[in-house]
Image (cartoon, rainbow, N blue to C red; front, side, top):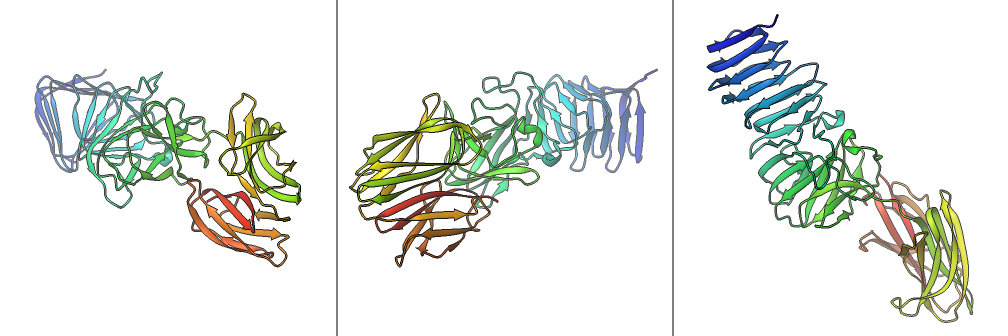
Length: 467
């Protein structure tokens, strides 16, 4: 039979006190002194009707904590420690302020009211379910999650979306500097972002690439060329794979824009981005697969009257085909022929077509999907001189050690320039008939474009650096 303990004025000073049954504090004071423990087992602790708890030690609970019309004060070394084996709840009529709260329950803890944390919210087992309520860390509180082991704050409310965001965990008025540092333990690292306030929600953004993680950061502040890192746990990935297709995404008010960034498969995994000049909201999403993966596109003069164009795809998704376009000035292009695509393929495919053209000209590919959507390749320039230039880069992709081989240069030499996805040149050099080693270990992971020029003939190829 459970018993209810009605406490008047109690000071707990012994090393450990056990209370079995309902502990009801109604209009009285419980003092737990430093270095002492109060362990409530097989029932809940109710702090009601003008009662107060002054905790400088540790209060262990294996069931519900209730608070209504009462106060809780926690000292610098105190803990309100949830250690049950089934799901526990925090029930309150208004948002309680808990200095230091620990979730140590594999079945988790669920909120039924907002919660204020002035010092530490720690998760050593299980999750804290916001249940569409808010946790406010203010300007001093810190969140200590175990993201590598899925010990995180979550919101398991059904039907969460960008228009039904649920609850948040908030950190206010936090300063950043030039060193990339995690803000309040929230799983977002910032540098050169000024003073920020952050609300972290746990919904998936609408149409974030081909899918977003179950976490969105609404950040207020005035960044200047800031750096951002967002960490995520496996339970926040949902059905997405943890691959380098994961990128930072920023909501512009109507759609989610990809921010070119770098994925790292650490524990926990994270995505890094630089050059950030606006905030709110940010998340991690999966970049949709390209309709084709174009490994190379090059042009050579077969004879004074004919240009031969060659290209190679690594894979194709719903690819109807390629319109080959030509231009005299690299600005105004016209269609000259069409080459049928493979539709769907996960194997590399080589394409070739001949175009009657005696004058120097630029060429590009217009790749067209089965649904009519299209995208353009880079352009290649073919001059009037006969040139049999064949270039290859291998192994591709790799971690930054490539071999560039050009055949057919005879005694001439050429040059190469390597640009990143933003069009910024990151390396250059001389190319000879013999192979050239490209040591690019210092460059971040990503897709790069290699322009090889010999005389008036320019060949462009893609290469990918992985980490």
